[in-house]
Image 1 (cartoon, rainbow, N blue to C red):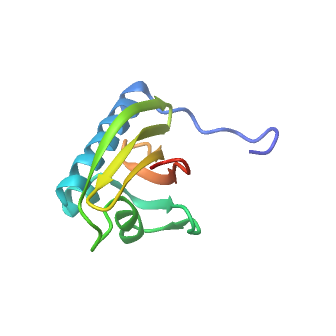
Image 2: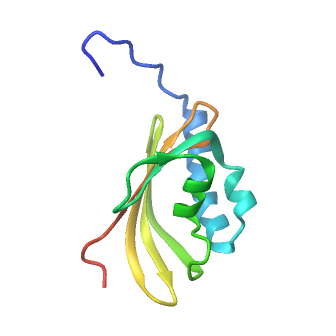
Amino acid sequence: MVLGERRPAPHSDVVTAAGVDHVRLSYLYADEGDVEGLESLLHLDPQVAAPREVAHGGRPEVLQVLAPVGAAPGRHLLSRVIAEGDCVAAVGKLTTARAEVEFADIFTIGPDGLLAGCRRFYSATSP
């Protein structure tokens, strides 16, 4: 943001709460393999970034990060969800048949409460 530039009005508490619900639902849908359900939570043009990837946009790319096609099914266990305005952070553990890894996802919430962006981080110290 440039000095003097007008910042958009913050989201209402209702929109932020809807965003938190959508974040929690996204993990449930991902664990169940419900791609249609997961897609229903996405804003029209979402953006995504994951380790070793350049940030990019589009529903297929976001779905591939949140529920990778062909990947071993997994279970997300959230330990903390933190929200303020248009940002929701989810911290937890992803367990698959192959591995267990700690993660943090930072979501951007659109003005409609849908998921407009996601940036994923993995712990370097996970077993």
